[in-house]
Image 1: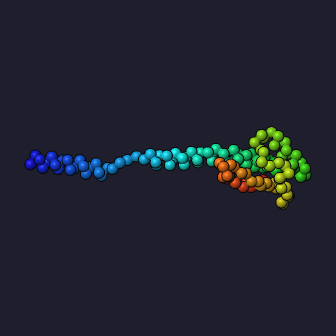
Image 2: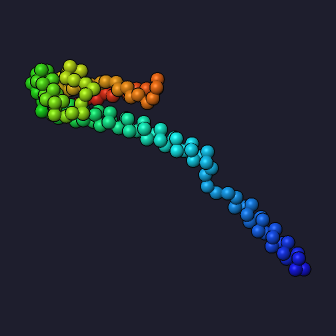
Image 3: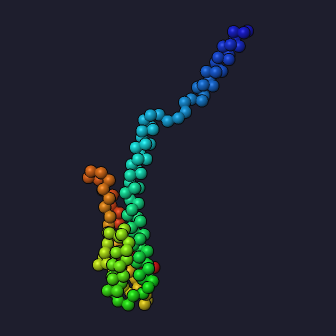
Length: 133
């Protein structure tokens, strides 16, 4: 009887070990997720400055439209002054602005493309469009 208890206890330990299985991540899984996270980080680091530039342009256009300049050259001059102050605005200039009047309110819109080199012949193209409120 003692021997059957021993065999039974041994069998229970083996079954318990099989039921739990291995936990964790394999080396290949770790490398895959590491490469994926690194690539995502590089793309985010290259895209983030362009997004900040877009929001800077959008803020400048809204501020100029809120001041309601009288003429189109006045709008372009105000944007040029803002561009001299804001060092991050490099993708467009005042000639790229489309200026119109709608219901006696000044509307300023802009659009531009930004190419970001990811490596070798691979580029990411982002199309930005904005308009004053």
